[in-house]
Amino acid sequence: MKSKGRLFHSLVKSYLFFALTLGIIYILVQLFSGGLSGGYSDDPVDASQIVKSDYTSINSTAIEESGGWIEILDNQRKVIYVRGNKQDERTRYSSEELMSMLYSGQKGAFLYSIAPFKSSQGTSLFCLVAIPREHGQSELKLLEPPQSINLTLTSGFYGILLLSVISAYFYSRWTSSRLTIPLEQISAAIKHMREGNYDQRLAFRSNEELTTIQECFNDMAEHLQETEQSNQILKDSKQRMLLDISHDLKTPITTIQGYASALLLGLADNEEKRLKYLNLIYTKANLMTDLIEDLFELSKLDTADYPLSGEFRDTDLGELVREIAAENYDQFEQKHFNLSLSIPAEEIVIRLHPTLMSRAISNLLMNALKYNPEGTSVDIELVQSKDEISLNISDNGIGIPESIRDTLFDPFVRGNAARTSDGGTGLGLSIAKKAVELHGGELQLLNTAGRTIFQIKLFKGRAKLLN
Image 1 (tube, helix red, strand yellow):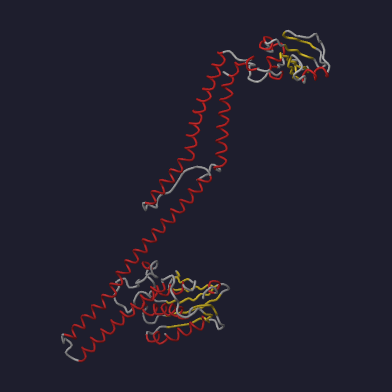
Image 2 (cartoon, rainbow, N blue to C red):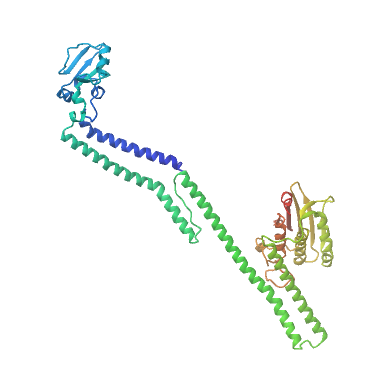
């Protein structure tokens, strides 16, 4: 969502607007009420307080009633206008006389003040105000306004108070709509999520800070939703695995129980039957042993703190692949498979756990051997680049059904959808994938037409970090 700017800037604008509103209210009140008080003041009268460009309109009533007067002087200090009962005969003042009058202290009978101003015609003039000293000492008594004016000022005060409260109320509502409403939406979304509903998303327009919180919340909600879905998939996978284990254990156990019971009841009435029954019991027992060992191996590899027996060491991967191919060559030959190797003559050294990597490669070869018909060609190719090593094990057999490609490396997944006993545990590819990932590598099924290719990819940079 688009941000409306930083919260700091928004608050500054808001408070400036609030202050401006109060200022305008105050000015309006002064215009309609406070202005009626004219020149009355609690402070002593000063020439600068009453002077006007049209000096004939100066309100000097209070000054004259106190026994004072005002004089207007030109720029040569000559008296050109007098209002009130002037107590001396001067028609012109020198600079020294004005200075003496203004700073006469307690000696003079009058208090003087002077203020320069411009007349309506633009002429530079001076306004001289004189009031008796006894009245100047308590100017509040002299200039006390009439009762009617007091009432007007009181009404103005209450007007300011009322308008300020109204302004603050609407300002609060405006601020609430910009801040409180988004925060309430965030709070409601968090409560919704606390109940396990991770589909909640926020969508509001606000300041940059709140928009950032909204984006972070939506990212978190999406992550939690994906995690919940992954956990559900994992839960379903574990449930399916338990069912598969039960199925794969129940079948051989039932067979063993049946033939053991036949032997106990003496139903094997000749040596040939007895040996046949014993051989079936032995085969099914070996199948159960292999299944339990593979389950144990997979559970160890799936543990984060799995203690690897032995150590990782620098190993010639090409030589390791040749040894594994040689160990399994007889089985491929018995089934009339064509096994070919494409391995560079030079050493391809990488840090790995030889036992785990041998298990992964052997499981991929056995997978090709178990699920393909006689005459299948199996190719092993080892390729080295600057940063990685790829080991490709491919065959031209029956291929992998599309229905299980996405779950191929899950436990108990087999190409045989009927899950009939085929001598495999369905854990080989899962173990191979875990073993490769413990090396910091990747095991994946490549999408190619006509061939099934399993690729082990090892990264040299990651391999250097292995113990």
